[in-house]
Image 1 (cartoon, rainbow, N blue to C red):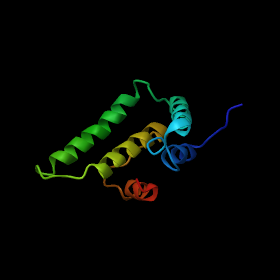
Image 2: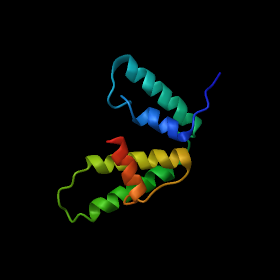
Image 3: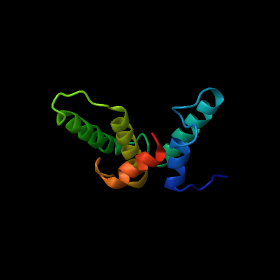
Image 4: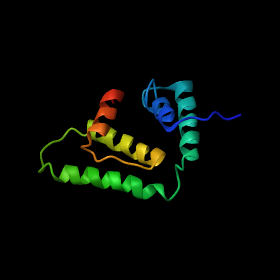
Length: 111
């Protein structure tokens, strides 16, 4: 029997609590397995995803180019790109990187 999860529930399970990045051992294995299985159900790994991911990468590169060669803090910006790419894959919609809704999601997740 499979559970029916909403997109928001999957994002919370993947990105919150200990998550994949902040766990280790058996918890990491279980989180990784669950995340990959769930993302595949949403289309992860299909050719149709590559353009969405490349759009996010291009927007990141454009932002870096606009910084005029100054040093930049990439941690927050990378998190923003990853969350936006996952959101686009799971929901089919994406936010501009300066959209207040996306910035609020990042702030709420405390990434």
